[in-house]
Amino acid sequence: MIRVHKLIATCLGIGYVPRGGGTVASAICCFVLYFLCGSGCNQALLVSITGIIIAIGIWSSSKLELIWGKDNNRIVIDEVAGMCISLLFVPLHWYFVLAGFILFRFFDIIKPLYIRKLEKLTGGWGVMADDLLAGIYSNLILQCFVLSNRF
Image (cartoon, rainbow, N blue to C red; front, side):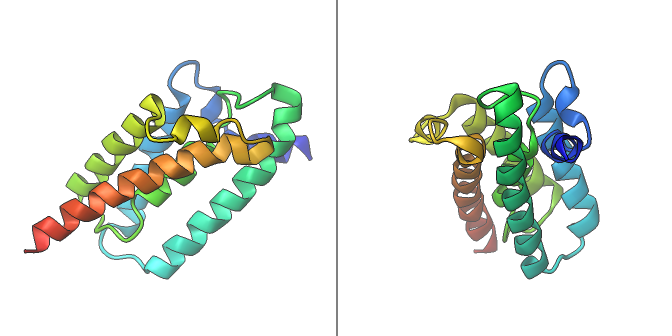
């Protein structure tokens, strides 16, 4: 069962990239969302997929934290979940996807506005929560861009 958790948490091995695994996982998530949903995507489906990623991310990272230690860099499903949140309800045009990627990586790396405090939560929640909040902040800023482009 640990192999399954490793596959999930490392996003099929992306987490084993020597440097920048979180950035690579976020970028791949952007490409997948753009190419699968760029021409129009059912937002309910995207919300459901994001919810599933969050749930299995919490579950798998809780299991692997016992083996690998607190918030190990091989666990990158948290970046994928945060990136998905960043792009929810945003038109998946290349410029919004790129802006979402930059915003998410900024918030995930710098960890302002209480993001860092969420890392102190225990288990899988501590692994996932900071990236989820980084995704929420990114999404809020993207929503402002989307609204400003509509008027």
